[in-house]
Length: 582
Image (cartoon, rainbow, N blue to C red):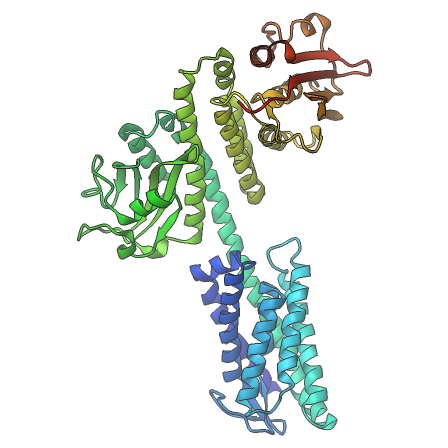
């Protein structure tokens, strides 16, 4: 048994070595991160199926409880058995990919084992199938709060799966006496080493992915700083001067070989490798960029041929090209180039995608600022001016603080920040928007505000079904909620409740915002909505602008009022007639 133990250690070591090499392959990591999709499941079945076949080939032949020396087992006699790491591979495939992947790998492994034994040992097929499906089910349950089960849990699953395999061998390998003798000889080494191998395999996997998550967190922090630095230049719009500045900032933070930016027709900036022929003012020269401008989809090139630069000495070997959008229209591209294709990893792809979203929002912000100069309604201009840069940088600082502790939550808040500013931009050029869009804007604002002050405010929504499609003035509810958050509770840090209620009454849409705050002094309350009421936390123009917009849009049919509640706190109400969108 000791000799078998040593030989099994070698086999388990081989699988662990293959696992270490595998998790450092970008293609495999990308497959793991998208393992819930059908194509990824199929790829996992192929990968682990090959592992299982290798386990069969490298197994240890046992005849009459004697180890038969061999290197590669291509054939087994009918009276021979095999000790191998097949169950380890099947268990890991189930833990990672779920019942489907585990079951299919088990089926492949079992069928190959029967072929290897010249048609004997048919029971290995159902045994391997059961191991794969059960490990997949357990993996799903144990990974409920994590990407994968913990390594210690995986080891326990490995033990259980080996026990299942031993039970099949015990009852189906021939006579019960032969089964008992074989299990006594191989059970302890296989159960112990395969469970340890499962533990190490999952440890390698989770450690590698955690390192990648940490890298993402660091990158996200850099992205936030990058966004703050590029915002002033994108406000100028896409031109040669602004894009040159932006490209240098992006290259400084991302460390890629080159950064290029274009509009729909020509190169506006190129910083880094290849700047001798990727020259601003030239037309877009790579087929890759032309394809992105045509399709509007992020495209990745892993070779010089795919990059499509016609210059014979171009050093650019790989690229990510991201479309830049404004109001759902393609206005240009951002290109991240690599002179070494191996530097283009899944992390860089996600970074590029995030930058594209942020920069598109910043471009829209710049365009909106230019358009706001031409808007006729003073109220729209005033509200656009209230896009508070302090709120923006407070949100950035909040997200930055979350980077190392909770990168997934930081990513979610970054998307909410994008939603918030996108809503502000759209509101600056539209007279009315769907209520659903307005509520999305409010929720994005609240997500950022509650991240800064956890558990300080409780905001509840009571929206009548069917009202989401009705059109309301942009910022209508947001102004009321933001005003309540900023002024209603003073310095009180707990028991701060806000309720947003929307109802359709006859042909009117009624929007109420209630709070349990400290109320409004009467001398100030009577002025709200009529004239600016300055305070320590604001200029007091938001409610006045909102009231005037309601009056301009709906005349006497629109109402705005704010009052103190007898039980404490205040109540603001907007009433507008239901009309077709304008």
